[in-house]
Image 1 (cartoon, one colour):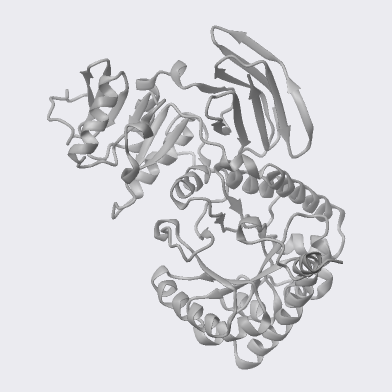
Image 2: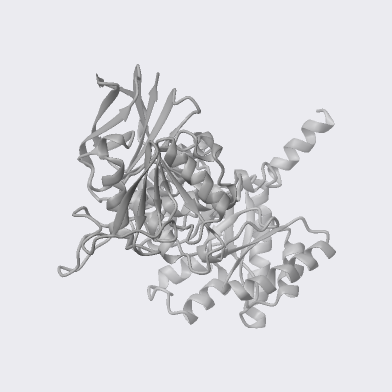
Length: 516
């Protein structure tokens, strides 16, 4: 066998088949240290069988569960923090387990806490041959912890990557982080509200989704992977796992799969329900990997949403983006530093509320956009204007276009998102969804809009039936793909420069492909 092929074969067995951009992660926590930590934070199940499952999770037999799945990156319990005996036991079992995983072409990352001893963690990581470390904890502690760990790893000639998993608001495009991992993602689904609460910002159910968050991070992190870390409910169904995977993927990211204790125990016991759930999870992950190229397709947009990531408090800005996505307004994110006339090409409107004090150059770009027929949504610093007491904004003519000037620097996000729909006009959104109160969509298109992808995600526990998707443009063919089966063609109804597609039923996730 030629030397190059020999090396490639060894690389696959050693877990080196691909870098971070190819990893499909799973929280795979266990061992004596995990048992101790969960006892300390009171998340250890009382059932002795469950405790046994956690303690013995690094039996090589559990690697067999990953066969026929796309999962290739294990996040294992690592670090220090137990007593000396517990730490030693954990290091021994993980070192052996990681070796077994590498022979199967799997990468292994250690989950550590920023409060652990950085030098000790790094030394043991190098000795065990782990592929990397994921650091959890307070962002300030993480900032001190990671450089020390990286320094020792370099001394030990280890190529292990190190990156944090922290709150989204603390993330920034650090060039040393090969993956941007969010610790505080929401569990996708329909939020249960009390009888007194409103289902706002509309009469539709309140949807918990990460699509807006992932799109925001992807817009400024370049091609690096974005991971979302959170646990689904203890008694999660297969649909709950599928929804979490699809929600992250719809925005261009990846969900860190975290199988619950019941599922893990059921898999070891070969319980039919657990096995069926695992197969559906694997199918969902495989579907996303098979269509990973879709992440690189540009968003279909009528609205440009300018983000100023230098804002000290991004709470309202983020909520504006969240609710704009929930209103199903096709948008393109534009970093404030990248605002140019060309960045607004093809758009109908610009959301410029983040520009609390626009620079003269920014004002010129936006004014020219409005003069040419666009709509600009701006705050009170745009121009002093009389706004009637019963109104939140005034619309000023500007050449062929308009500027909507708000009274407040930060209008109420719920009201603003509804105003956007009214100002744009529902028939001018380019893509509309009907009969889908529990469904969100994310739309992408190639540069000429010859191929349009409409990702549909149902957040309810029951299927969404009789959906209608209306898209502006002339298309000759429509098909739909889902994780459940082969692609199928959909009937197109054409009229007045647009098409309508009927989706009889959507269980969790599906993608409509329209072609001209």
